[in-house]
Length: 229
Picture 1 (cartoon, helix red, strand yellow):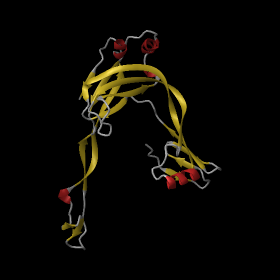
Picture 2 (tube, rainbow, N blue to C red):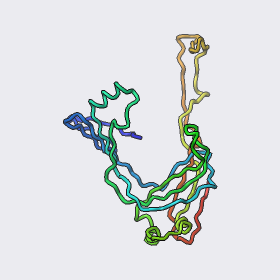
Picture 3 (cartoon, rainbow, N blue to C red):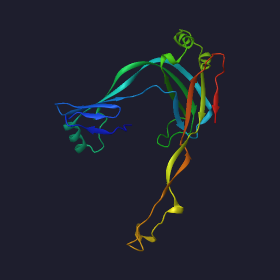
Picture 4 (cartoon, rainbow, N blue to C red):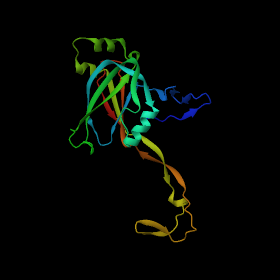
């Protein structure tokens, strides 16, 4: 999801927040975005059964630190005309700058998504740690040829909780709405000269997701925990 504000400068080079962009002479445009792949948090749907969260695996992987997006202006314009739905190849995406990371995977039970009725009720999530975030003892255990999954699970503690969000909502007590009626599905004001006056206030609502935080235990003797709050 790209949330970067593009700013054009006189030289024709496009500068982006957390993204490097450049127009090339062949009419294509290249954007390089930082991925920030390391995170100790994952988000699972509200309604998931937290008691079923189970450690699956921990392994050393390489993850891209940057993504390069390249689009051909002419090709994409023609494609948009032929296929308003677009294409997965416009722009093309290439992973770059791979870095070492420890991927820790968990599974959990949750109701199947409405968009995929054939899916089962078991899902997975992953978090990623810098190698130096794990102790030498943990890294040695993970590199062993024969590994004990239950023992490895003890190196990580899981804390699941539902965050609250601050959102804007209509303040009915300080708002004024014009009177009217629906006519053939359209709202018709009784007084055409009336203007709604809408005030807003900030309220706190629970998130639609559960935040799951995974922390490396300081001692492998500590039991694996799944705390909720």
